[in-house]
Amino acid sequence: MRCVNFFPQAELLASRESVPPSPLFKGSAIQSKLILLYCAAIWSLYLPYSLKMVAIVIIEKAEQKRGAVVFPKNQKILAQLGENIKLARMRRHYTQSLISERTGLSRLTIRKIEAGDGRVSLGHYVSVLSVVGLVEDLAKVASDDELGRKLQDIKLMGK
Image (cartoon, rainbow, N blue to C red; front, side, top):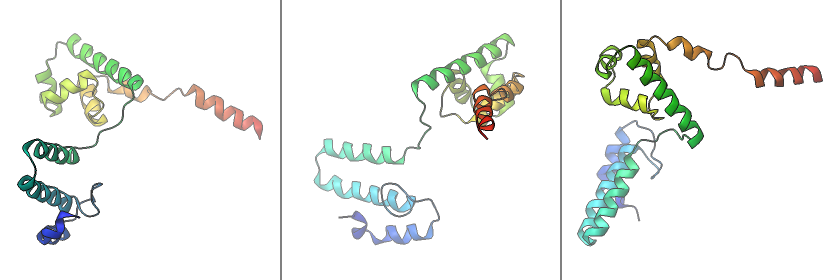
């Protein structure tokens, strides 16, 4: 049974919002959040303390943002990129605070970039590379596509 049956105001409030649907319930994200919070309130009346904590953890996990899936091999490459950015910053005697001021990013984001965090936007990486003067190197990433050219030649020879 859905808890929204006990709380019709949740559907009324959610119907006024234009937010993307939630994967947990069919309806808006606001509706799902209200349903989960109301269910937690109802459960707290009947459940022992340990189960209340489980319900709260489930609600918190449901509200977390989804991040990019980065496989271990690719994580190593991101870590190397972060290390290269950190070394470039240190060679120029720039502090993380200076990079933060020039890019408008927080120092925490700068630390995440230098650690190769895959959840940081590519645009943030570009901002930091721009400050250290290496943004042009990003254009070289797929400029010489050897495999793509071989595949294209095979396809052209087959015609």
